[in-house]
Amino acid sequence: MSSCPICNTPMKKERREIEKGLYAQVEVCTKCQDEWLDMKAYEELYQYYNRKTFKIGGSLAIRIPKDLAEVVGIKEGTRVKFAVKDKKLVIEAIS
Image 1 (tube, rainbow, N blue to C red):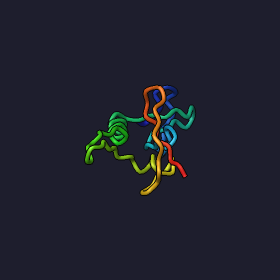
Image 2: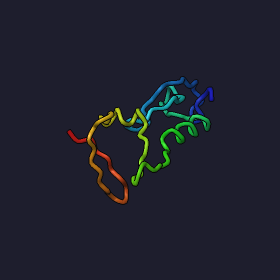
Image 3: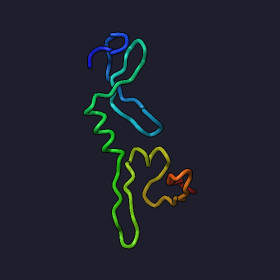
């Protein structure tokens, strides 16, 4: 994509935070500041933040992407607390 589909202004590539802790290389309109991902970038982003559980002993495990772990302050050895809210699993780092 070389120009904005809305206002036809030239686009520039930037690394932007899409959501807290979620970064992507996007094309940004210099006039209206809309952000665009091409389908390939979208698929890569989707695959990176979409994980499959696996079994360790009698438990299930999930790998947390480094980018997300850094945002919430989780590193190796960090104690975490689990909660369920609105049928979603919430993981919180505790001190």
